[in-house]
Image 1 (tube, rainbow, N blue to C red):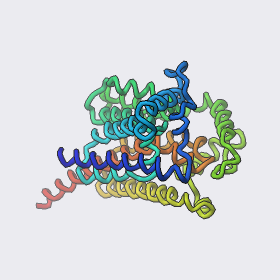
Image 2: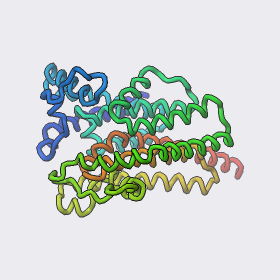
Image 3: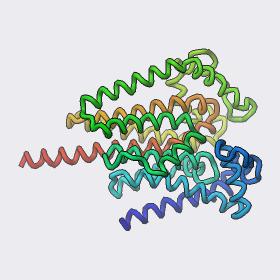
Image 4: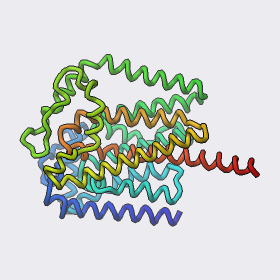
Length: 365
């Protein structure tokens, strides 16, 4: 436990470093979003403080900056993102080595910068991390009822990122039903089918509205901004479906190869995305191979990971494909959520691998 405490301390120090790096170095090359506007009172609006994410950021950012100054005013948001990560990661059954790998995975530059300053991304990491912790507890059958902080996280998610919250709540509802009624394998599989059919049914009901919103979102991007792309994916009715595969990919990846040739400063983000996607693929291939070798497939975990990845990337697509900077920034809201569940599956499969290997060794003896 003392060793793990030191690991977390180093991770916290890394976030302090990223906060200072963002304020004194990174901000000289690019904008920090609305951070300075929050501090300067540009979004200060107390009248709808409880109902607007921008007002929450504007009021708290302005007050913190007045009391602590524009450097230390970032600390409350840094603490929130750190606690969201700790709340979920600490519930995983990880070895020391796995914990180090995961926290290194969560110490990459883009994630470190945007979640260590006064930003909506810091809040996103907080509420997504809290709800990830509840999902993990449900998976391990530790409890069914929600804690007060998890209810607060739902409220915050509703204000800040309702598109992600809908997906997360659907996963929570699925696992809650499974644990509440202690469903076995066959009934769990039937519940999976009900979940998939429900998603398809709801999507069909709101298909027109989803199409209309998807066509409107790209118009909110400034076409004169340096990194804004030409809208080629959401132009006509139905493009949200037809162009989803590429749109989901590019909205997660960020800058393309041609874009970093035109703007070399984006190369760090490009190679960061290359590393993330490569590692995800390596983890999933490892899981796939272990499933084949030992003929053990955890259908529940595979289903949860697939639902989380596909649905969150789908709702992220319209917000992230128009601008590589926006893609990376918005990605930070759910990046830790993705990483936590990849490591959950990896640790579970590794545990099953060790158990199977031990049994086979005993049998051979």
